[in-house]
Image 1 (cartoon, one colour):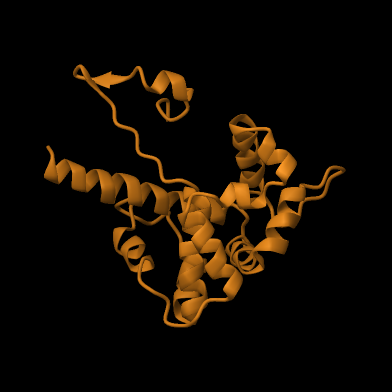
Image 2 (image 1 turned 45 degrees about the vertical axis):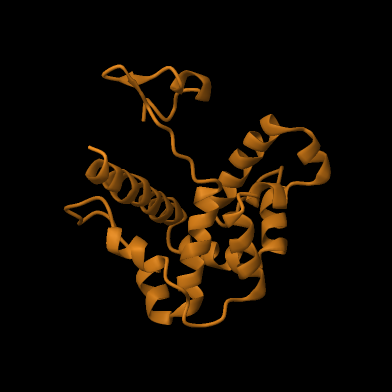
Length: 188
């Protein structure tokens, strides 16, 4: 949107009716949502099938509130240890740092933003990318978090764009429908 694409420094200058806007940020939101989806993926074959076949074209409402709430439940089966580790790292807001080399971490916050964009190529790009310059981030992700990589590959198997459709829909449902909806009800 025009607001979200504004540089961070300029968003602080925005107001509505003289009141400053409030910014909410869920650290590592897209990787975290992949992990939450992964809990359902490993927990139930029926849930896995439903999420992998999810479509958005025939909806009257853009949000899937019940599904997002259901995803927060605990899995019925034990998760692979690397998936559990992946979720804990995402919940602490340290996912990108967990994939960065020490040299990359030393470059600071500016490089972290660049690294995040590199990971978005893994998250939302094709499963197999042919080119002269392979994305080392993809290999590092697959090595460190093979179960999360498996979930992502399955999510993009039929159409690589499906991961962005599902994860961005869940993120907008969480922020706009659930969080902002609650704020509007409790603090109109």
